[in-house]
Image: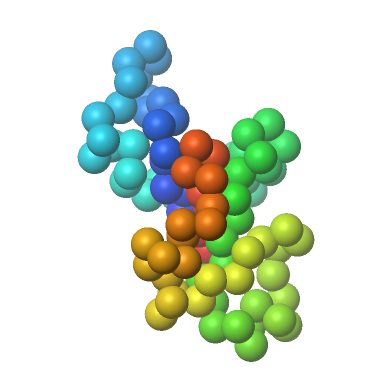
Length: 87
């Protein structure tokens, strides 16, 4: 599965906005939800594997940010009003 870091999205309770903690908690998603997020919400897809593995194979459109370099600075160039899918 993939992990989605919610950024201001809704949780399971209809009509209730999530708390900050809920909004930032990673949630496992399936391929159908990944496709919906890309198609409907223009989600960022972030591949955290080492660059050599990213070069071998990755999801089309994914951004390579190896886990050891994942920090506030490397994430600063991304729009934080869009969902972020990390795998």
